[in-house]
Length: 188
Image 1 (cartoon, rainbow, N blue to C red):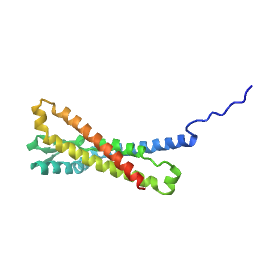
Image 2: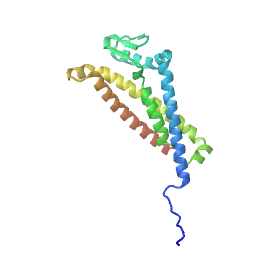
Image 3: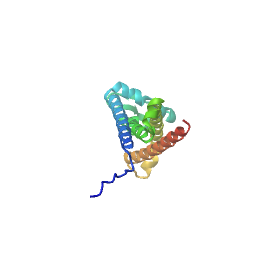
Image 4: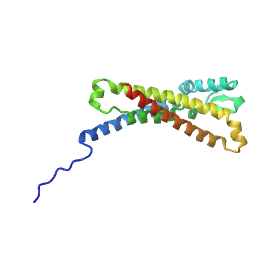
């Protein structure tokens, strides 16, 4: 009988454990994003706080007034628009933040913990996702209002076109976030 040969695997146990830790970190970030979204949406006062910069930007850009209507959101009657919790960008943030944490998790957990790289990495992913979510959402709302009449003249459903436009803008923002994270990783 031949002795059993030890099979070499491509991924040693340490890498498998590290991949599990990386996945857990991404799940924790996802939970954080979802809890943040739930906390903002469930509280009308915090929802008003999150939506107010977007309402101000739309009103400044198009020269119209807005007001808060309880239970609905910010109403901009001149533009026939209502900014609701879907317009906050929190759904995109709660997806982008854990993805950035997962994609750019430090390569060595021991070194990351020793040099406090892990905390810096998570904070950087949080800031990049937050800024990208805000900028992409603002661009989506402004372009939606600017091109609304054109969409209607082409016979497009406003909400379908608005959602497609939003998906393209958020995809571009996520790709820009990935490029930024990759470039900043090289400088560390």
